[in-house]
Length: 119
Picture 1: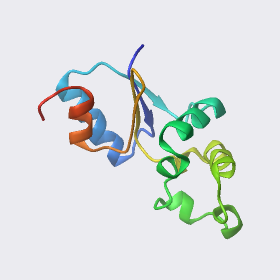
Picture 2 (picture 1 turned 45 degrees about the horizontal axis):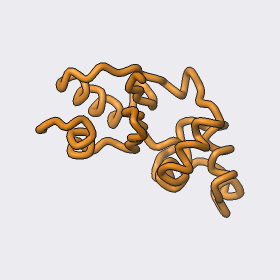
Picture 3 (picture 1 turned 90 degrees about the vertical axis):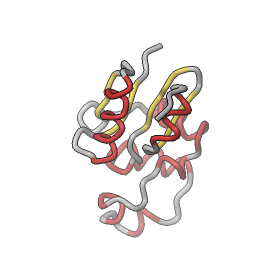
Picture 4 (picture 1 turned 180 degrees about the horizontal axis):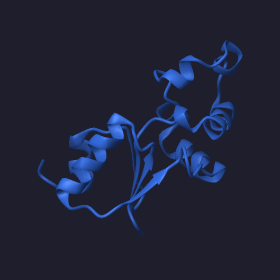
């Protein structure tokens, strides 16, 4: 199963993550969910694995600009619906490293551990 990194092309965190993967020689597929979208089933699966709270980027500009009625109260169902409608509110990157490994956000030490690399 190929390694897939999900995010938005011009995001700084994405650039850092992709540069790290490239430097380590890790082969991956990039999925830009802003242009290619994201499937409900995938978001629901991710939410069950890491929690919707980890996936929803509340600190980002897109989320902060939402009307208050869309931000509170929020639960798993509403979070998935919001992420489908506004993929920019999904925290970046989401790395599906296969074998059940799903990393949200970029931390070099987490990537090094997942790929058994000395960083």
